[in-house]
Length: 429
Image (cartoon, rainbow, N blue to C red):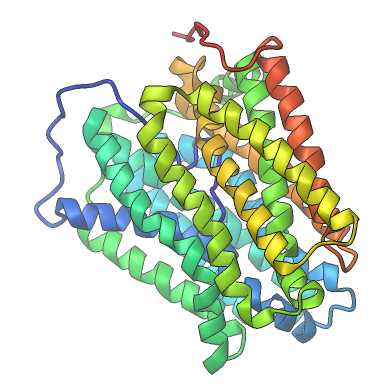
């Protein structure tokens, strides 16, 4: 279910170019195979989070964790690594090229997956998961960079759209895949499967993908430029406002991911239904993302995302009241959670796009900085929510409600107190 960064792949850009450029793929990698490769790269992240959710109980027992909430670190450590590394991959890829950097990132992911599979202590597992997140961040950043190198305009939009259709199925199917693996092997087999998957992608890239960044387009690493980009990104009102709003709604979602296994096992006593219910909730994000891609060009990102934010606030408040008054059932939970995730799917890509609106000249650096801030901070918020799990759904639903209200306040600040209005945004040239 993890979307990733400030400009998640859930957002399919509506390009203005009317003349597609010729793609420059080598003879060894046709268009369909290229799309499949990009989708496979994007999937490494969601697989690393969602496939092991059904196994958290067994992992905690195997590593001797006394408190059930401690097992949430298996998710949070990964997210912290994933968020922290985003700030460096764009710079490295601009200097050394896309192919070597993505291969190194995948190699880190493979090594960390094998380390997690062989972990015999909680501390070793945390280090392995943190490093696995560091590797996965490269696959996320480089996938978009490689597409942008090869295509632009409507051609790029088509590639991203097709890749996203494949990617959407991963959060829906990943828990079922993890549970299926556990039926025939112990939990380390999930991590071994992730290592095998990433190794196949490494071989695929090595044999088929040419370097996509021309030698003349490579740029030296200038730390002062990075600092300047960070200053501009975090001082611009729209950029900062929508980055924080995205952080808050993602924080609620990460709280759900942290708590999901405990909720369905300890609260609703439906551990066997967990993958199916998780798929239904994740499917709501997928449907909303596809709907957003079709409507954003006609309705506008502000109208869609602001309406979704208000819906998110209302549904989260209703859910918190239902849980606090003791009326929560598994069906109430699934319906209300799916409705919130539908609103989330309409917000997340648009918030990311609007955060980038004023930052044209430093778009690459800005995206890395925003991704770092939003993912690390959201992981921290989600961990705080998860750590308050008390055997009921109240902490999670209350966390969603407070995060949604804070996100609304931040958006109102960013927009000067007004929602649903078209504004001219001065773009940094």
